[in-house]
Length: 69
Image (cartoon, rainbow, N blue to C red; front, side, top):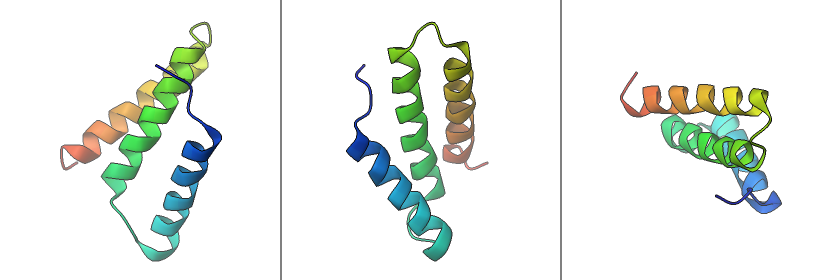
């Protein structure tokens, strides 16, 4: 798994801003992208327990939203 690029992070942040201000996009899809990026960051830093915890929490929330919760 490769670390996310600056452009990937920037694109997610721009899409999150659009969602918050205009309601554009899907919250579940955005959370899934966020979880993917955080998982990639955590994988690149295997000794960082906090990164792993944050990624796991983001994935749990994304899965919850995807399941309709």
